Length: 72
Image (cartoon, rainbow, N blue to C red; front, side):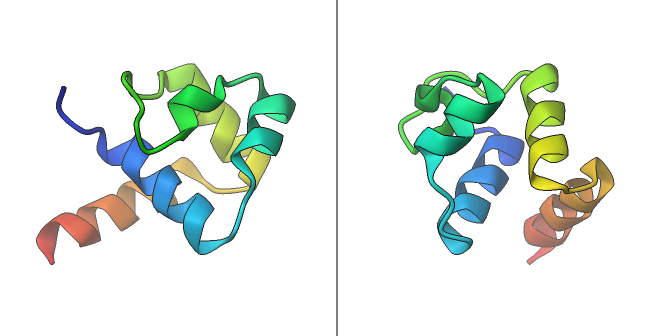
């Protein structure tokens, strides 16, 4: 399976900000397996939007961060 840039962004964000995956899973309804390094399936668009809302991140900010990273 190819890695998802969006899922990878969130994994790095969780680690950098010391965010508890179990808490996010509980509060958003997203399975913790999808929020861990060994995820088998990338986040769906609904899960992406739920995480953006929960974390207070604008989707376009994630898009820009991913674009910057791909150019580095």
